[in-house]
Image: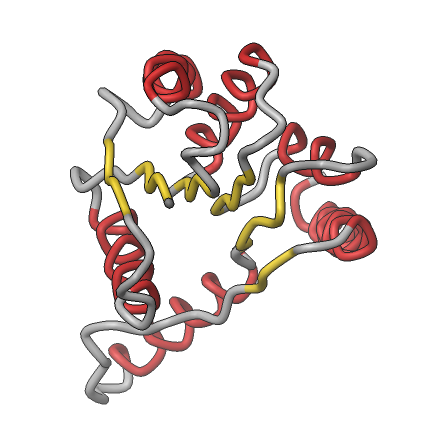
Length: 173
């Protein structure tokens, strides 16, 4: 079974949940329970997951899907505290705690999906230019994301971010 930790209060997380639902609809035999923390904080996610992990007997929960980085970090803390080795985790967004856990030998974190803020900015700037030129701008734009599933991909992504920070420092230092 899958436990999806969602947060319908924000449009970005609603979009992620819709994507999750679309994919999971292809697997009608998988049981899915959805829960939502009080807020998108690691503390609230930790508390929620402590309760949920105690409600699921060992072997009854296969995978947890997390909607955003702070929630994923809270779930990691709860899984570690409960010493559960029977549950896998898939996250969304980036955080050093997620990446550190992904690099551990025998980790239960299968991966996380990351965004590229530079691409988001590029798309936004292009839309702004079109608007100023009097052109029609799409109501929605979907920016590519990447699934990070290996320690090597974590290193590559972190290096990309570091290189980009260095490149940008010329503009704000």
